[in-house]
Image (cartoon, rainbow, N blue to C red; front, side):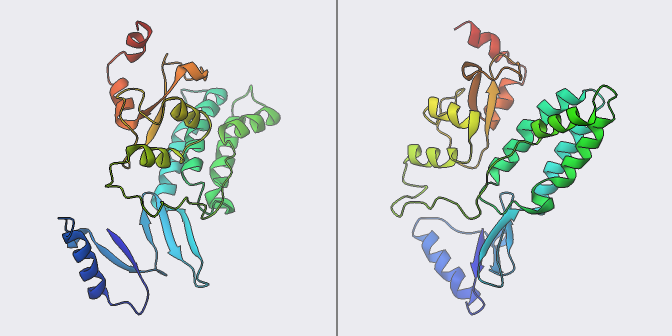
Amino acid sequence: MVFFLKAQDDAEKVLQKVQKFLTERHLEYSPEKTKLSLATDGFDFLGWHFKVQKNGKFRSTPSEDNYQKILKKIKTVANSSNYGAEVKAKKLAPIVRGWRNYHRNCKMDGSRNSLWFANKAAHRKFLKQKSINRKEAEKLIKKAFPAVSWKENNHVMVKGTKSPYDGNLVYWSKRKSKLYDNATSKALTKQNHSCGHCGLKFVGEERIHLHHIDGNHDNWKPKNLMAVHQSCHQYIHGGKSFAKRHQRR
């Protein structure tokens, strides 16, 4: 649990108010997992870094840990000796697109957040393949690093009457689904914002994955795409031949 404080706020009074709020709901906070922080110091949460600038403007960016993780994923694919440049571009595209979609309400300009360094490193790797010339490498890079529009602080506010505890799974599922677009967004709309595998609504912090029903990641036809929970996706590929069972229906 993280609380933003103004310099003049009394930390003890803030905790007392929080404790009162939670006690009325038969809950309590964990002192070990609770952090009090000045708004100008910032903090990391769910892959984002939140901070109030000296000019009073609120800003969110990908956290350093989250940034290093995406670089590691990109590097693993780009440096793999098992794939050619074309396959690498196909594998990198959903990784980069997903990361950019997740952070599309953050400040995403600058060389760091635009993945400029990863882009150039991958470009050099593509050029090392003798059958790929500079022009072809540039086309593959555009495919591997698809552009995603972003707008800082464009978060959709929760309606005043809504609460995560109100049981309105449809509202909260649709709200979470707005983090995704393109093929995933279309699949979510088609499935009424429910998991295509277990049928439950998408609530909580679990990521939504896009599953290729026939197992062919090059087949992006709408009928072959299904939005599922991350855990359901892991179960599908955990030895269960979901594609065969789906075809028998």
